[in-house]
Image (tube, rainbow, N blue to C red; front, top):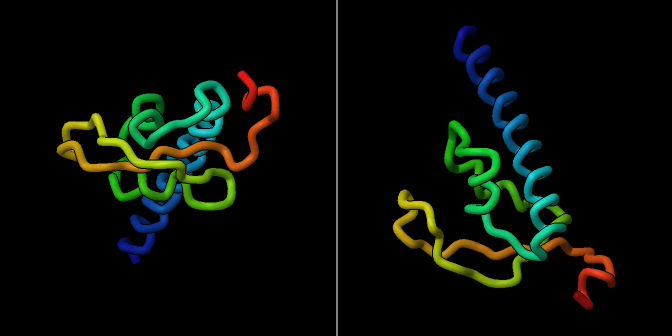
Length: 95
């Protein structure tokens, strides 16, 4: 019974982190045009479970447009996705 409570608490904190991270990702993408998970982590910090980082861009909001080496030391320069919003206002495309 205790394990279920711990798991539920952890799951809740994961959902809170993902909500904050996705909100930050959306705002950054609107400002910069394209972003990486490193950009998001720089704003919201590392989650308690690093595997959550891969979930930030799941769904229909972002599209991967390429790859770049990560700047986080823990990734040892591994390639990570470069993302942009799937829908971009025309005013952003022409600037």
